[in-house]
Amino acid sequence: MKPYRMHLMLCTGTGCVSNKAFRIRQVLEETLVKHHLQDEITVVPTGCNGFCAQGPVMVVQPEGIFYQMLAERDVAELVEEHFLKGRPVRSSWRPVSRCSTAGRSPATATGG
Ligand code: FES
Image 1 (cartoon, helix red, strand yellow):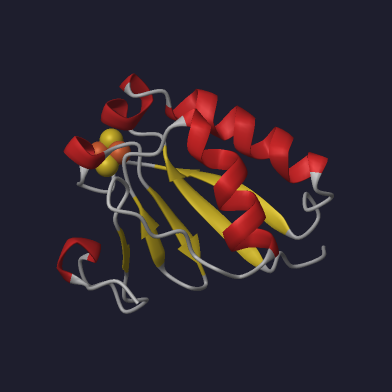
Image 2 (cartoon, helix red, strand yellow):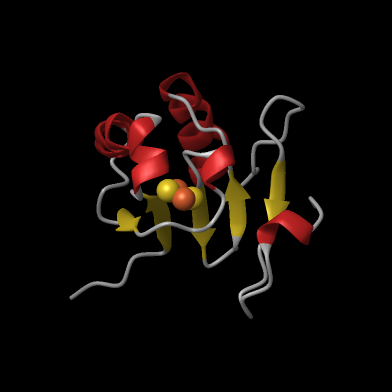
């Protein structure tokens, strides 16, 4: 089995699902295929991350970059800027912070 270079750990807990996490998963997977990234990047559904109020949330591994309040309209920019060009998306309406791979809370980490 070929290893993926990136895992998109998309929360599919109840809170995130109520905010359309399944639709975001579908659009993510379609957009990855559109850019021929489906063999390099995979979407992994996870249980609740404990940040339900910020959902849907997704952690990009191995970078540990935490996205919150994802919407369907964000997916194209995420794929084109972050997953293709390596530039994580930062904006005031969708803050991005880094998670520690050692398990620290992404809410306490700073962007950059
Ligand atoms: S359900 Fe997604 S963070 Fe809780």
